[in-house]
Length: 306
Length: 187
Image 1 (cartoon, rainbow over the protein chains, first blue to last red):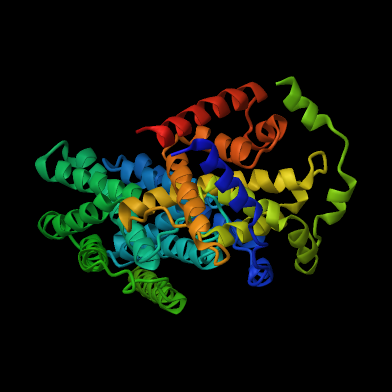
Image 2: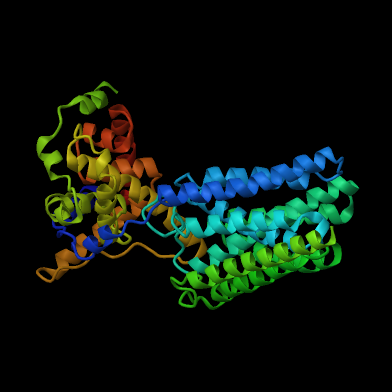
């Protein structure tokens, strides 16, 4: 084939190119997806996450002074939440998503903390839950939208399902890392502790793989979730165990749906659908209400006793 | 390198600055003035594949969103083509991931005009063969070939858009042409 003739044909084709349509651009310009939440909401979310971090930091300091053998489990959340308070200001999809993941984790963790017996300060758990819940509500979904940002997460299908799966994997990864670290700190290196930390690493790998749209990550996430359920049931106690079992089960269902889509070659199942905002708002409010009611009743009961 | 600096030092393009829209309603005039140039650049960079109209619109949407960053020291169409280069790079990265995860697609066939179907078909085949050969090039060579050889932009323009030296553009263009020629003329 003649190179010059091919080049000439390509140049002619370029020269004959019609002007593209303007239709749709005007509407597109009217709504510009933001790479991060607006200034005011971002600072509010940051302050709320900072409050939750402060609760953990104070608790870690008290534990340290009381000679508690478990300080790491309280110091790590403070560090993660402080990092999330900074990450929300970064206009990158990864930073925005990791901040949301941390807040969901400690919203559940704070609620679970509030539900534990009175001597472990349920009011502190409620404060953590309120800090993270308020941060999630304030930040909304700005910065997570498909749009103009170069690093936007933009699969052709199952976007909402994959986003939910990433957040659930982050919740599992954080909680398992914290619980594994606590067990190692308190009991030393043992089989179950190592298994928990390995499962946490698997969750982090799932997060990285899903965010980069790797097919192996879907399978990895499903397998890790399936492994987490019996592992947690056998090694951990309430109230964190039900959270982990619940999130692993939901993740298994979500990733099973994606795998089913792969198998059938159908993308229409999860096309352009996201988790309804109302559902997430109701879930956050329900968790906050539970944490508040339990904390108030425990505090009241404690005051009556003393 | 000094030529690249010379491009950066040229006086502000008053006409171009005047064309930068201040609101969505002004966008039409900028689009009318530069859409064809941007569309050609996008088509060359994507090797005639992909959602070119979407990408062209995205170029203007990004330009509108970042209009505060346009300082007028560069011609407006060069700035727009620079955005197009970055968006196509990003599109190709995403597309590569999607292809791995979701789907596989081959090069699209160029449309055949009805005036002289036979010669048009031959031209279309030639063009398709060229784009297939260009598609196989590494990204730096492909971009240089698209802008320098197909689009026939000046060395300085290409260097400005790709963010490399004029020397690199020249070297890459020669290498890209050699590879594409070899691919097309291979028995």
